[in-house]
Length: 64
Image (cartoon, rainbow, N blue to C red; front, top):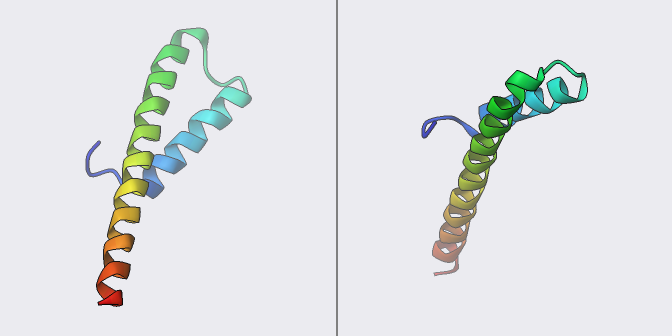
């Protein structure tokens, strides 16, 4: 999961949501899909925080 790109994680998350909205997920699959969605959200959040830190560092370096 560590090397998953933000785009790939976000697209998979969107697909899970679409499947849930369309009724494509059975009750048996629901817990697995919700757990996977939580993992994907965590990846997206980590990538966003990391990117924000990188941008802030670059901006700080440009100020000097």
